Image (cartoon, rainbow, N blue to C red):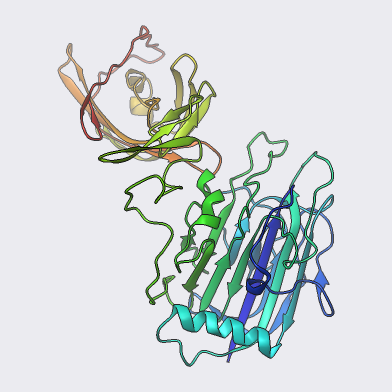
Length: 441
């Protein structure tokens, strides 16, 4: 006895060619229910005919939420503008700030149509070698059709009338008792984040994946990055835009059947790896292999690109020991003016014993304009006192808010400065020379 949950997401402002009708289920007709056309809404608790086993925990009900995901335990109507994980178990085909007041519809229903169940059962048998005894008994279908993001101020949006016709961009998500399948139509993702709200913080880029009851995360390729638009061209079962996972155990598991997957870290040519580079980069073929180069208006190494002359924010944590004072996860925030190469950094909750002394650590928070992901190590020697401090900074790339993430470790000693003293450091430049693959000094 198995239950399947199948969800479709359609986010679009233009008609595009979608997945063939044979791969999609109907989302309109008798028995179909709809969420209210509004911003931030959820269904009532939906009692399922068969329990869903998710990360080893059985759930007898589920909630449909307008912002591109299904939840267990409780409804989550509001868009929570954070990077995964959320605090509750969810299945997120495309978690983003969705608004249906001006366009789109969100529908759901459960069916035991034998033809549809046989198709879904066959999908599982093909992907998992030891699933021959699997037999679906009900199918739960959820569709986000032609929706757009919060505070969209454009004109009328086009939405599909069904997958058999022109399908607006979308993602198709199937959830079984122990298997989840996700399909993304060609040209299926036309937007990945909204414009934000009055707080000034941009909306997080769309995230796709699973969150367990104990907040364990499994994300699809590109989740939370600009590369999420390439889900339609990637796969773990050999067909563009299609993914399937077992989700009933302690961890998410990939298919155990053999497939020619569409996403691979082994790259030979641009034709063989059309999505290897960043979406704002060009792929160039050389005899030794391919090379990624950011577009003229972007900095980066081609795998990661950031826009030129646009201020960046850095958020991070600092650990270490300075002058015997332990640093345990201090918050760092840095504002970087890319146009003139200046960085303004603030660190919270610095121990009072080194509060004024820490002004000498001016190197914290600065970045290279060529990499969003890199390690930076500096050894600072104070000649008057013969004290030495070593600073290791690990830049982890852009987060879902287009802000750089940083982890820093500081070990050593710095000069003691009198209370109320101020440190002024003249402008200076740092020059680096490429001394080897991935190494600049």
